[in-house]
Length: 114
Image (cartoon, rainbow, N blue to C red; front, side, top):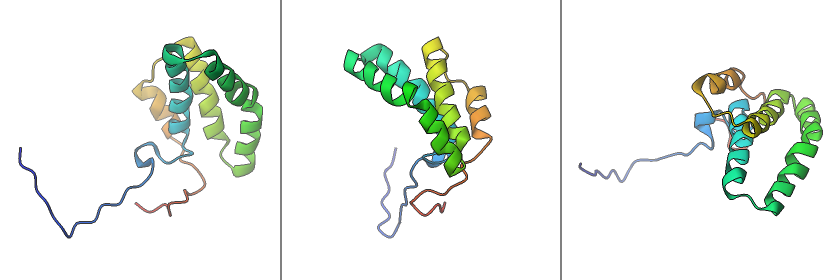
C-alpha cells in the first residue's frame, strides 16, 4: 500500500450521513435495537433502570414529541428497535431498508449540505 498526502485537500464530515441524520428512522431503530444488545452483554442494574425510565416509560412522550416535530416515524422506529432487541431480533438489510424509506422532515444543525 502507498500513502499519499495532498496538503490542499479539504475534508468535511457530515454527522450520521450514512444513516440519514440524527433523527432518521433507520438510525433510531438501530439505537433502540443495539441498546438492548449492549445491556444484555454489559448492563448493570442501574443501566437497565435507566433504559426502563427513559426509553420504555418515556416512550409515549417521545411519540408525542415526534408528532409535534413532524417526525413520529423516528420515535416509533426506536420503540420498535427496543421491542426487537428484547425479542432477540438481529438487524437485517430488509429491516433497515424498511425504516430508511422515509427521511427525516427537519434538517440537522450542521447545515444539511452533502
